[in-house]
Length: 148
Image 1 (cartoon, rainbow, N blue to C red):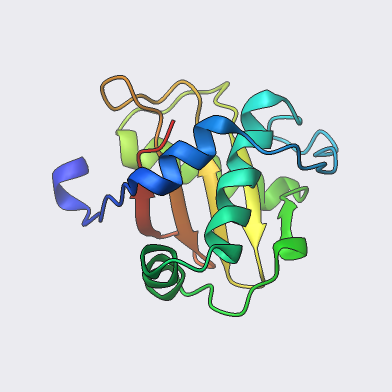
Image 2 (cartoon, one colour):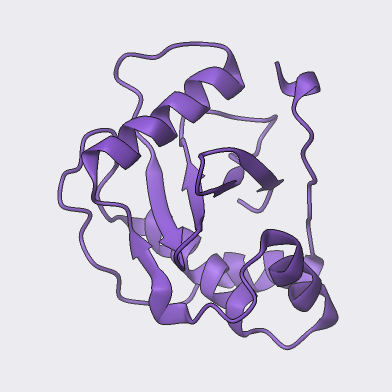
């Protein structure tokens, strides 16, 4: 299934280094939306990574913002997905992407501005990595990032 989807894997040493160092960013609880996981250490790292991409002034981050379609999005616009229908659609994306329907699949999911999403299934691995999936408003893959 993965071969049919076109993904661009972007790994920037600077971004990975900053992400792994971690940022103390407060984020709102996810409200128990069906299929979406609550806030924990992993979700804090996801939000920190996205906020880093949004605020970093390097050319790599600027290219990433452009390729994701998130130019002009403010860090305050990275918010948990709390809508049960949206969470279910994101879970469906992972089921299709992996080619396995997992009835109890739970994901981390955040909107990035009005038209983009970032999600991670902590149980979906690509080698030692758990990829972040960047999706458009139709829940289609834009990119995956292997960062942590």
